[in-house]
Length: 109
Image: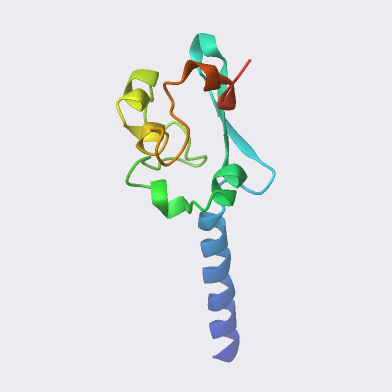
């Protein structure tokens, strides 16, 4: 019985760690960004700013599929209207997404 409890505890821990670190340290997610260049999301940058995965998932960004990316179609118009990334990147909590001088913070050519 004790072995089963230990195995169950390890399995739950592994599942929790996996969900808490969807973007592993040193890794990024990349999304097509149109003419402005691909969008690179760095989970470490956001974590270093004090954000937790649950701050955005699943309320702001729905989750799906094995890699989770691509669950929603995101446009700059949506972001600038305060949706998706624009929920925080509004010039108050984080840099303003509509500031054309800052496009390179997210878009990489």
